[in-house]
Length: 268
Image 1 (cartoon, rainbow, N blue to C red):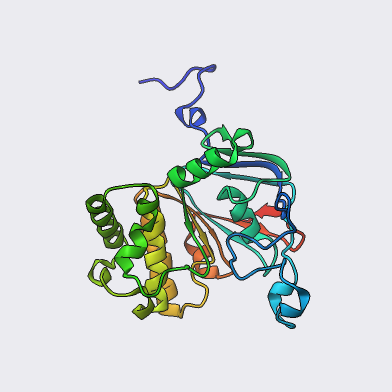
Image 2 (cartoon, rainbow, N blue to C red):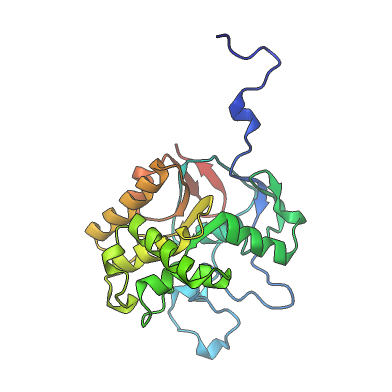
């Protein structure tokens, strides 16, 4: 069998990248309001009165805004964004997660120009194609792990029987089916993070986006979470992680460093 001719593109070139950023500069502005913090960091609240903010908190200063970023993530890759604290890693994830609109540049998701979408279409695309793992995981502590994982299906209007079955399947993927009926508040930090990953996976997203998934975990728990992400990639999932933890970087297929000035450079 002969290969493609000189004018025949290879099959890989016909498949658009899963995520493609071209000259993207992030924006921290919210239409009609002052910036109120990054969506992936619920702790940030810059619209609070100054006297209500913690005096010495690291959250008093905004993160660096990523600018002129070129990034390509292909299907099945495990890509880690690394860099110093407050370099803009989470901000960039917010753009990829369709939570922030870029101030400049182009963001294509599976070849679709997201700039052409209204808020409702962006929300629908996010729910269909993207699974977001927040930091902290924002679980309901009094509700069971099963209820927490099933929450996105409830919002999607799926029947109760379907929600239960698919949530159990998702918990099984992360090795927590035995803990399905325990309240999330009784789980360890590592287990709560895995429940958050199961919740992101329950809608079968094309891309799993994790913001610092090993933050606050001990070494053993961090290894379990990174091992889970590696297994998900091996099963064909596309994974994009922002982390200062070199463990995630070591197991990823590629690293991209976000510099102190918010620029992105490929590491490997």
